Amino acid sequence: MLKDLVREAKLSIRAVLILFSLRRPILIFQFGKVGSTTICRTLDKNNRSSLHMHELTDNREVRAVADLIRAKVPGWKVITLVRDPVAREVSYFFQNLDSETTTPYVGTRSYVLSLSRERLGQLFVEKMCDLKEHPFEWFNRFIRPSFGLDVFLEPFDKERGFQIYKTSIADILLIRYENLWNEGKKAIADFVHLKQLEWTPNNISSDKYYAKQYKTFKEEFIMPKKYIEEIYKSPYVEKFYTTDEIEIFKQAWRTK
Image 1 (cartoon, rainbow, N blue to C red):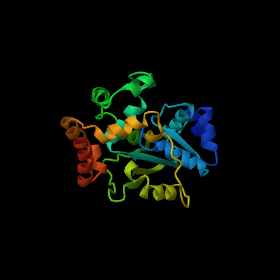
Image 2 (image 1 turned 135 degrees about the vertical axis):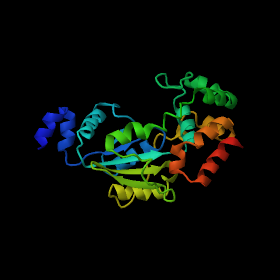
Image 3 (image 1 turned 45 degrees about the vertical axis):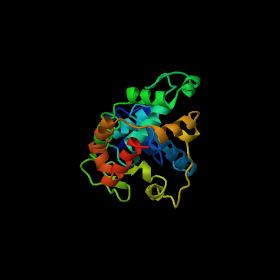
Image 4 (image 1 turned 90 degrees about the horizontal axis):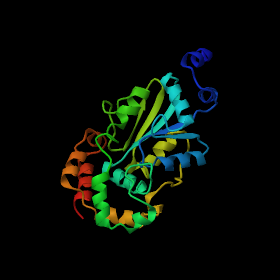
């Protein structure tokens, strides 16, 4: 049966090796700046092999896994995350200011460090990614076609801040970034069959060269009202956060 699958799906050698391995990697599959790198490093440290994915074409190993998923090979464990979209976008914005291959590139590190908070605020409004498309549409682009799960049609426990879904080929843990450091730790440990987890923080904005600017920006930046209302009334936000939580998010970005 497996030989037929390999032949009919025209699997690559790398995909075949994953298929016949004793333990498949846990897929950390999500858009960027939601704590996923920390999860990967922590799982690896606890002897749980993981594969970090933003899309299905990130590298050769990811493409091999994508081939297996398209062939409907079962048995995957997937961890995916959501986050306050403006907080996520601010983190993404700062990480990519000096990256020539990623939007929004503005210049070298020394140039970035010379920018005032006011100028950074202007650049953020001008260059921030189209939130209607990403991350709002990410689940419809990747999770739904890959695993047959439409998270917007399924329940989500806003009180606990996470939910486990089961499909024909995968168990999927969806967790909020805001719960990652408390309830989320036990949820992930249980999901991957570990007694406990101690985070190994990685790719944290407060550790980057722009840490001081990032902190000041979060403390002082006021988001234009029209963007706040548009972003926080999206189905994505309303699906995963309570009315009170949404109001706290909005308040954080419209007044200081």
